[in-house]
Image (cartoon, rainbow, N blue to C red):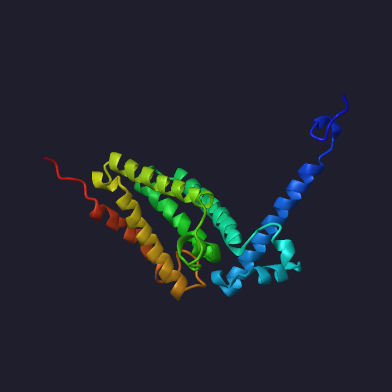
Length: 219
């Protein structure tokens, strides 16, 4: 029987090359989209502007992404995956419990300030008509699970009271980190994490967690 195109013995890698090239082009489109968002704002992205930035005709762009919302969705998913990995690595390198939670949130803050355009897409609502797909949103659920696990570790270690092992505690730290980032981006957009008036306050804010979830008194 003669070898087929799928037979590895033929050396015919045509479909694989086409797939790789398509994915490379899709990634390049997202890179250009991020550049436009950084310059014109997240809501300033348009398919026509994106096509001009890539020096292609708009119909060619639609071969890779059927709509502007599809571009936002791909950016959202890529950003969430990158952010999740940053947080996971930071937490893995710290003592389980509050130390890991703080390390993860600080890494999240540093990443957000270094990637402001995509961070706004992930954590704010700069495009009211955009809702991420379940696939794009899935890494965010993993991020919440990491934080819940850190709170559970803190409770087991006697760092916090039992009520800290809850969704409410995750909502609380989300409010803290988002508040710090909002102030920093609005008032000191040129500064990195740890500089200026706002992000250096984050360790102090994290110490408030123990006050919100105190360890019960003996007896």
